[in-house]
Image (cartoon, rainbow, N blue to C red; front, side, top):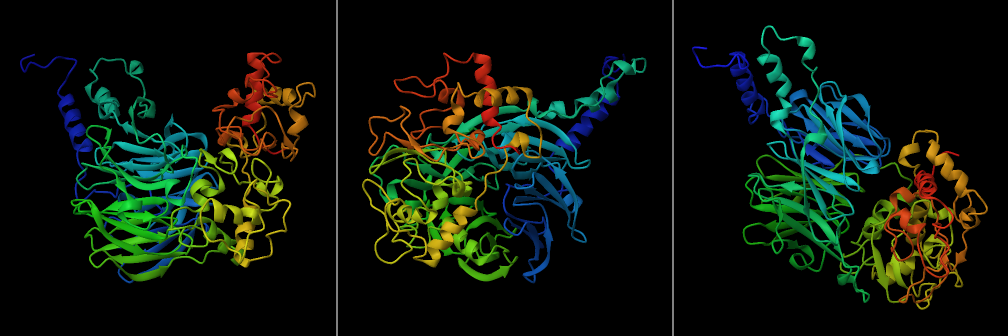
Amino acid sequence: MADGRSPLFPASLALAVALIVLVSGEPTAATAINTCASSVIALTHGGETLLVVNPDSNSLTLVDTATRSTIVELPVGTDPRTVAVDDARSRAYVANRGSDTVSVVNLTGPRVVADVNVGDRPYGVALGPDGRRLYVAEQGIDRLTTFDTTTLEPISTLSLPDRPSGLAVTADGTLYVTHLLSNTITVLEPPHHLLYLPLILKLARPPDHNSATIPPFQPSSASTLQRSAIRLWPDSNLVQSIALSPDGSRVYVPHTRSNTANPYLTFDTTVFPMVSVIDPAKRQHLIGQQFELGTLDPPGVGLPFDAAVTPDGGELWVVNAASNDVTVLDLATRRLAAHVEVGENPRGIVISNDGSTAYVNNTLAGTVSVLDTGAYTVTDVITVTDIPLPPLLLNGKRLFHTSDDPRMALAQWISCNTCHFEGEHDGRTWTFGFAGPRNTTSLLGMVETYPLRWSGEWDESADSEFANRRENFGSGLVDGEMNCVLFPPDCVNQPPNQGRSYDLDSLAAFIDSLQVPLSPAHAHGEPLTGAEQRGQALFEDPDLGCVTCHPAPLYTDQQLHDVGTATADERIGPAYDTPTLRGLYDSAPYFHDGSAATLYDTITRPGAGSEHDVRGILTEAEMRDLIAFLMALPFEE
């Protein structure tokens, strides 16, 4: 051809290339949308409306930032956790962890216009920079699902490591994913060249080409994303969120490190609150550049949960959920700029576009603290919801989540929630001088399976006074001595602690209110699969003996047994309380010392006196079926 173009690359390709440049470039001011990290609080692009998630009220509150008054409180799904704003469509998306949905909220004439079914326990939700993709982190099934924001249909799914939680999206579409109980930050980069390939094929098709041979449009699959991982410290834990610097040069990750290797625990040697720093260009965790909050903000803070960088990039504002405060760090000097007290259980922060105001969502107060970022003061407190929990349970939940009460913790360091996050567990095995190694157990459904703890040394939830004093290093919720013996630890053979203090009774009532959810595969009444049914038959076979100690429906006989799992550093064994098997899909590692990383490890444990080695009894296929059944617990029986 005279112009040098091949017939396979007609003039229309130039248009395709131009379109690619147009749609993949930086958003213009007219089409800019609010992309940010997932959080319990957000601002519209112009900053005129504040969106506040209320987990216990199952609602989203819209606040007029000019008048600092509530516009409306909208009911959404159960246990909402994060919100993302779509300014281009005047929409918001709310991830509802309890109802497995994302509520789509119209911000003009505010109302919920749709509830989209998603995977088990959605947590983080974030919008892609072009506004066409909505990312949802599904904690319960370890998956990221991408939705088309026009059709609200799923585009793709991607399996991820355990408990994907916080999300953050950069201007170029790179997606960062935190994982609640691990040190992994998953990084996903979209293949922009593949994203627009169907458009190129359509525009570049020769006139005589048989259209039937051109594949129909297939949305970009998440499986084609370029995937990498950044590792924090091996003991990094409780990683909820990510904060991006305005210039994109740094990523900040608030989290907690768990010092499980120390058998001589004191309040300030258990966990370490900090913010890690990541170089996104090098995909590198910058060791030595972390901010150690316990040192920078003495005497200490608890459970750093969320963070935000000021628009000028000069300061990092860190929300500490347990100690009910905000740590402000000067990024140039790496020193403390300010410490600001806020309300109960702050879990999210957002800073106005001009950098003058910060808003903090106090999730267990039902309020938003409004902060002057120049004076470092709280200038207003906006009530966004009336938390509907009964007073006894609300008081107990606040006590469970706080390290700000000296009766619960020393120097604001540790809360019950630090090790039993959301009433569950931290995935860690701690060594206690009075007992030995102890794998943190979930508290869900604990009221049904007394006695409590691995050695059965508690017989009521009010015996958590022992943990208040000996593990959180607080002064305790009752006057005088606790009705427990320190060594060997024993509260069972002592007078009850129940009834000695309203606050202790509140804490116990909240713990007892925690319920075990159905397993993800059967959360909506799905029947057992063939493998699970075969596994159930094996489990119930009296010759195998599983039901002897783990009878349905609690899957525990609530007795102590020596099954050959005691180790040399055990102080009060070798008999342990039979653990319930409900929730095994989400409670690894296993055994009192966390020595079994998987369920396969638990049923193939060798050793004299071991009651769990079934290798000489079951085939590999049968073991897989048995594990499938165990992973299905609990289900509707």
